[in-house]
Length: 233
Ligand code: CTP
Ligand code: CA
Image (cartoon, rainbow, N blue to C red; front, side, top):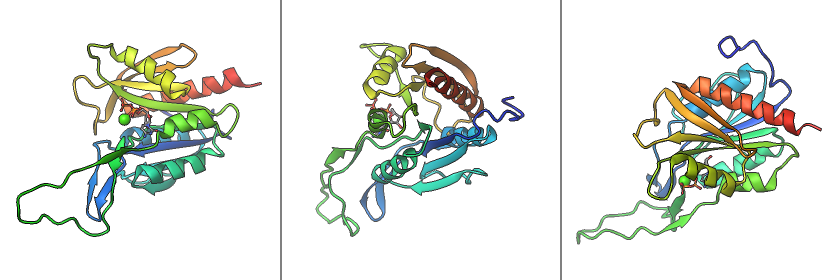
């Protein structure tokens, strides 16, 4: 089924996927950004369309063609991403936050290009925190039974393992599923492959061995579909 896409098990479902990395502008030509390619989000959108869902992809700076059959909304900043994801989520049965929103943005934005001056000094860069879209989606729940999915790239450290940090993040965010990548060895970014663990707020753990982002996407939709079944009245 995951190869041929013959099953239409998501038919009649509206889903929202965010993808890519946001940019936070300092001036008209400069921004703070990150290395998210958008490949996993696009794979999620494709997989959902294949299985019959009506899909909105909110794409932040994704340098990939629009996937066929997907309603694509392009954004740049975390503020724009938040506005578009919340708008689409109002009617959605599931929202998957595969995007990498910048955690911080410059406190000030200059409408004209920042100039260097000739005294060799550098301007200070003050940052403020961006809103947490996943936490907001999880808290507000636009529709009853809506399934909210987050992603986390974690490394183990002195305070805990990758899974320790991930369980804590799942609880902190309040989402239903958290897709965890171990990024201790680098990789993931721009790679066609992904290896992950999908944690459920119901205590479930699904390990997905290294494979294509498409295979991981299908496992995520399997988990979402089973959450719909378990919460159906
Ligand atoms: N996320 C979000 N809004 C933000 C930051 C993150 O919706 N402002 C979402 C991401 O899309 C992802 C999940 O939250 O699905 C986890 O992102 P992550 O960066 O791991 O979480 P943070 O709370 O920012 O934690 P950290 O300090 O580890 O970066
Ligand atoms: Ca973050």
